[in-house]
Length: 99
Image 1 (tube, rainbow, N blue to C red):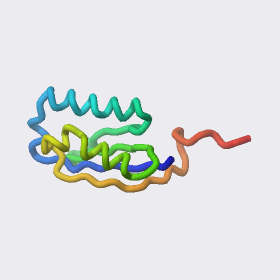
Image 2: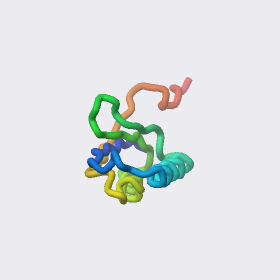
Image 3: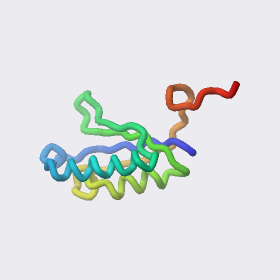
């Protein structure tokens, strides 16, 4: 398994998203969590209209598929997205070292 960061650049229309769109987006996230792909995600709080997701899968297609099927992307709330491979070197997501 490998890790991938999915970055979203939000469109101006994101501010006008509807509760129904948000519910679909959250359901999409929950399905990905249930499959063990979506590890964490959120938006930046420094005023940038951007979000980030850390995903796990066999290849970048897991993050690419998440993005292309995300209701926020389909509704035009995301103006662009990109996937980058990510190597976790340290942290609580790594399994403990073998004895």
